[in-house]
Amino acid sequence: MFFDPGTRYVWDLALDANGNLFVATGDGGQILKVTPSGEHSVFFKSDENHIRKLAFDSKGNLIAGSDGSGLVYRITPSGEAFVLYSATKREITALAVDDKGNIYAAGVGEKRGVSPQFGGGSFGNPSPAISPMSGPSAGGQATLTIGGTASPMPTGPFPFPGLGATSGSEIYRIAPDGAPVKIWSSRDDLVYALAFDPQGRLVAGTGNRGHLFAVNPGTGGTYSDLLKAAATQVTAFAPAPNGGLYAATSNLGKLFTLGSSAASGGEYESDVFDAHIFSHWGRVEVRSSGNVELWVRAGNVDNPDRNWSPWKKLGANDAIDAPAARFLQWKAVLHSGNTAPTVDNVLVNYLPNNVAPEVDDVAVQIGVHYQAIPKMPNTDIPSSNPNGPPQPHFEPPVPAVRDLDSIGVKWTAHDDNDDQLTYALYYRGDGESRWLLLKDNLTDKFYSFEASLLPDDGYTFKVVASDAPSHSPGDGLVDEKESSRVEIDTTAPRIEGLTASTESNGELHVTFHAVDGFSPIKHAEYSLDAGDWQFIEPVGKLSDAKSEDYDFRIAVPSPVSSNERSVASGNAAKKNVPVSAGPIEHVVVVRVYDRYDNLGTAKFVVRSR
Image (cartoon, rainbow, N blue to C red; front, side, top):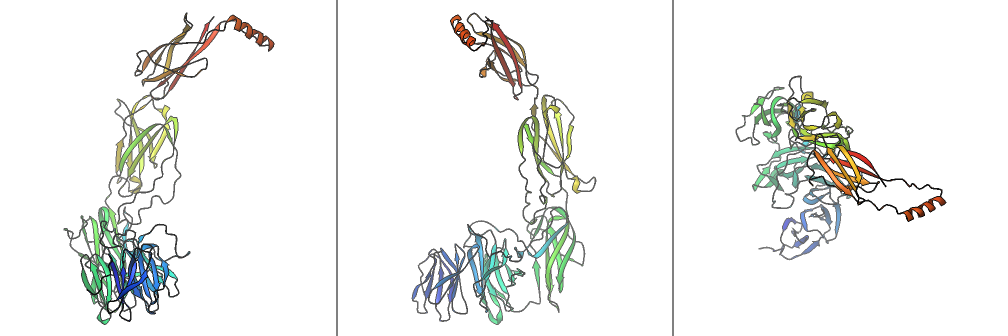
């Protein structure tokens, strides 16, 4: 054993011009210096958990990248450290320094509390990774652009930092004077290694698809997708003889050599394009230079090795000679010549098979009125990444207000072709066999109407969705769904035979009959002489029928005595207010609610001496 650092992680090693070994460690975030004789010391101690990457500049300064805050340090030979840059990403996974003193750093992983960086500039192409074919999901075109978005990464436990990041990666350039700028970013590919090829291009080794990119060191964000290694991650580079590069990979662990000159020919396979729906393929449009052949194949499973159609070569402007299917892949075969072969863009025209829309749910609410929502622009634009899972459109919640005179019907629906949908709303009463149209040509997924338009009864509502606006006449498809049965009752219960009389003990004896034409009586109340409302039970105690009888007694205050009446008369005389010596009157008011809170009222005046 040459040296035991006594730490849990050793992330990187670097040798200076004098043969001293510098060791980047984890847990404690230290850089250890080991002399050729094996003597060691702590060269630098950071406040980060991990020092992930090391590199030397031309002046002998050690450049280090951390995990935690995404810091890039410049450390002098005497151990004096200065933070050159705090990246927008959490972890620095790769470093490279060119002969002009520019430092290139790759960062991955989100960190919390990140503020906007780089002042008010723009950084060129915001997503410069190789993309799958993309385009509208409902007919039209799919395109693969060198400089688009990438396919999703796997999830799960990961063997080393960076591999579990799901927010893509970025490459930054720090100029000799310390000014930083972002030159490349990808939402999906993760950069694990940086180096320079013999042409001076910055080469990035990535996962989790094993792609190697040649990035333009300028700020335009342009790049080339050089090749795909037969491994999941490209994790390290080292100089190879004759100006080439060694490339180390993980999953599986292999060692590749990248030659210093262009190959005489080669192949490039696109990612598998998922149209999400069984589709018919049209023509392919290619923007390329040099001697390039294009081949295509198709299938109905996402793995091309599982009985796809064979590769078929395409001629200029030929339609795709592949069976209609859900998935498609193309490959470019490049041959050397006077003009270097390149492929800039591939566009595939295709037509998804029309599928019927689906009405997912229909809900009816009594006493609710839905308010119209102002139309928002761009809410029906298809997802910008059709190769990923379909993205739901933003649908703001429907404003609703309480309105006892309204009925609101609301539904949810979707269309896998992303077609424009229109809706028709029908209703049918209990015992009826014919659906009656309430409203058609609806574009909103809700409708309100006056409850009084429908007689008291039980009803079922039906929504019919059609994709006809997006298709030729006669080619549209429909789907329908019925609501649960609801009862509509807008008629108040009637109060019949209300009478009240004074008994010998001074109590009032009140009786009446309540009846509703559709729903059971819910409860009844009375008020005496404008007093508080008091609950009353029906005869039989349980209120569960459309008609109920009520028979109850009310204790009333004692009548005013003759002496009290004389005093009251004297006081009234002083105020010139007449005092009645006639009969005593009481006003009895009753009100009855049915199950749907429709209200019926009546009153009776009782006169007694």
